[in-house]
Image 1 (cartoon, rainbow over the protein chains, first blue to last red):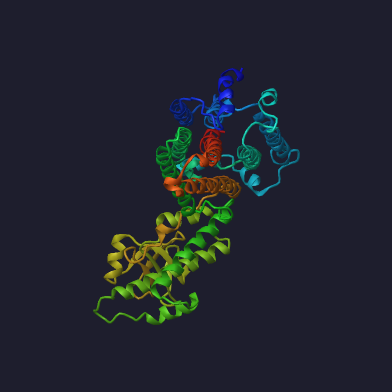
Image 2: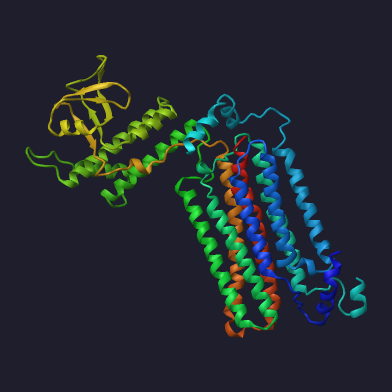
Length: 135
Length: 382
């Protein structure tokens, strides 16, 4: 489907060295600003039960912004299929790296034995005390 | 592939300029470069129970981060406009927008510097953050040592060692003549002695494991302003419960300061808790008048931040590498701007690549902003 808008430009791309598809860049800029505003608003929204929903939304907004930049500012919408050849391997490797890192640190398949954790454990009300200092 | 087949037999492979292909391949490696940092950060975040999320403590400034996000987005827009203008052979417009992009890049780095300064001022630095009570107390001792030695340097300039300077300072102190007011200089020397005394006392007590973090906090809260230090052999100081003391330090209230000046006896609530009566003939080694030297405000309230050092490492690694990328992007724009009026269509490939690079820098910040500024605050509710 991305071929359809690209088709007329593809012709131009061959005619001139550097084709300039017409994009309303200002509209994209406004969209990016709105997205930033949304993520800041989400930060102000405090809800214990909806926390993970908000986290998901914040990340979704970031991904949406990234897509705006990639698609329009970086012209990926108007590029040929080579974009997949270049971006797919890096994406797979990047995700693979995260997956590879996870068991090392995030998964505790042994009893954590680090001083910080020891300190945390007996001081269950400690975070509450921290609250007081923070404000 | 079908497109290229019909149009040309000379140009094979991907139908884009080599420069652009090179830039995209490079950006591919850049994606992996930053994913490594971001991935490590996320994994550390979830792998560390009690990861610092309090933005007051970490000095993460959401407003500054938000403004910087806007600044980068706007600069990205300007780059795109500049690139478009180059395509339309409007090089004056391209230059104008490049200059504005440069200006925004400076704004970004300025705000980043402001944020870094906040971190440096509050010692939110890798390896400097206390992760338990003892480290927090040590940090107070270190801060006080720094303040006391810096003050000594200003009183006795030179390259001598601190103990040599201290000896020099001791020699400068003279007993005030009867009926004469102490000179301002003499008062400063005495005040410094008082601070040094307090510092030595704190260091000894902390290293002797005699204080808890709460004690140190209380001492900082009462403040060292108007601290009196009485150190004597005879007549012996007596605590309210009758114990004999040779050394006592406490904070003076206004009425007590008056009594001290009028050489009248008064009772002192010592830092250690006991009430001690001070006679005029007790030897007062130092009075720290707040108006002479107040080092107390320089010593930060001690805090314990589990995993704070790991947090600071992650923060600086990600934001500093991002800032380096901003600098590289600025160099590319500067190169274009240095062409001045000679900027023409031969530079359009360069312009496009500089633009792609700059958008990538923007892209990285788009992820760093929620990950560093927004999500920790949301996770705080845990």
